[in-house]
Image 1 (cartoon, one colour):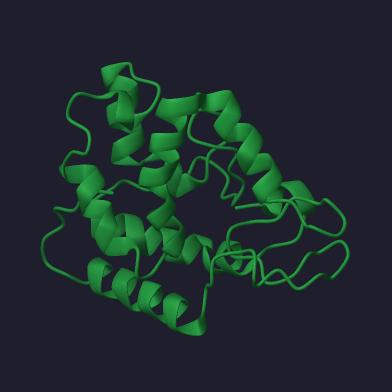
Image 2 (cartoon, rainbow, N blue to C red; image 1 turned 90 degrees about the horizontal axis):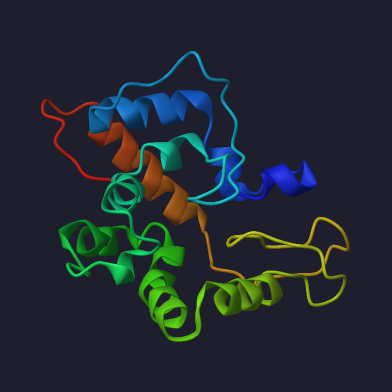
Length: 176
């Protein structure tokens, strides 16, 4: 979410406050852990610091339980959980990158993919890291809209409506 590296919150990180996350977890039938401090930091699926939604991700849990490094290593890829994520692309456009990322990882290895990602998500002017939906660099002010995914007011509105509807429905059988 990038708020952990710069101390500044990007649009999407600002959206995820504790009330929103609690509402989402309620709608998904997940128990919210009030004993852990609420933080938006995330350093990736396999790190020791995940955003609270990432800690309860069913896809992450599945990979851990199967003992695989990446979903593409699974003989069931793409499974229903992966295919089900496609419906979220309209709200969170970065999800469109998942399959091509898996293909790159399978073909060239994790280190090559990480190297490409490190280059891709750096400001072309000052070299500071930025997040998927950053519209400008917090360090030098460079306009990053040509480089990042577009996160519009409409995307955030859809996300809020979806979470609201999810948290107020009668049944809660949903996969993350």
